[in-house]
Image 1: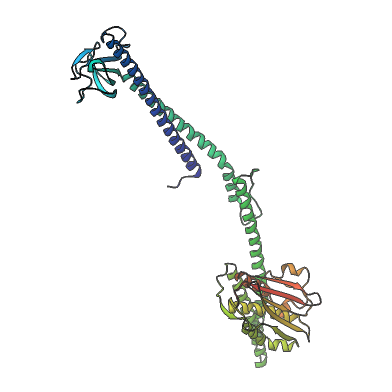
Image 2: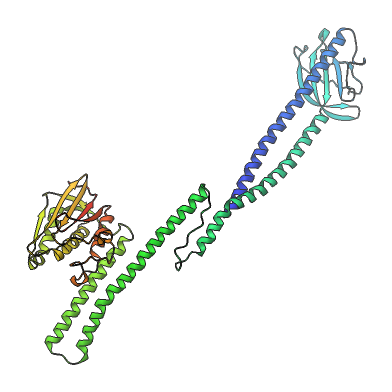
Length: 454
């Protein structure tokens, strides 16, 4: 059974109070009983000394003053054989002390039921040695003591139950007061919706756990709000990017079907439709990579990769594009450089960086790919001699669908996802990526991957 927190707090407080009162009550009960017993024993000892002194002087138990409380105390004088030599008024004719030993060497305390007159009462007895080998037994009724102990137990039980009930009621009220800010934050959180994500919880003006909880929840709402804004912008940008190639593809199909065309015209329309389809495929693949990156590094499959060979594959694949643009591709890669990375994803990241660099690099310039290792990190840099990044663009260079001016535009076939994918791949490896403008001309993008190299 799952109880509300308020009920749990109340039960815990009530239970602790009950345990505490039980321990205190038990201590008081035992201590009170012990003190009563000590008082009775002290009275018996004093009475026994008085009787022994009287007997030594030749007195008897029936003499006035030997038994101080005739209704509550009694005494017997026994021989060493257990015969009753003398007894106080009203005590039974049965010996109150029986011993296998002929001589009592030291005092003995015990409890027994004693018949005094017509009543059988619980008594505490003290047997002490007397002159001529006799034994004096004095006793006192325990009825008053036991009645006092019983009254104490009843009063303690009633008082304890009342105290437990009172503590439960107080705990219920106090728990409700302490949890009232939590319930208020719950109602406020319930009112926050996707339509109004900017609402925040009212944090109580305290510096306790509830205040810190409210601040933490508001920080979480800020992160969710920011994620929602990014998601909406992403969906909007993706829809915009998909609309253009789809419209072009539809237009080419409509033109081809509108009236009979010659073979050359139909081929041109199909080639254009194929280009738009390729663009859609690339866009879909890039969106899929970003979607996977949102769920962590699960799309990364790491393995031992030869970085020099990987860079050589990139330069070979871009050789034609570089030649068409009259740009030289240069590499600065140390041989026998290995890293524990995902070869396919790192290759995709390098492809995106080199493709961006070639699109903006002026004719007869050089695009350099350099790799190195620093502190256990693989550092890969792509450097071009183009116009560089716009200063305002650098802050959002790695956001999805963000584009710079000049050569970095949609006219070159980019959708603004290249650098975003590079960032996703770097972060999936636990690394980072940064972009800066060089002092002379051009831009430099640095990819850092925390991989063990050898």
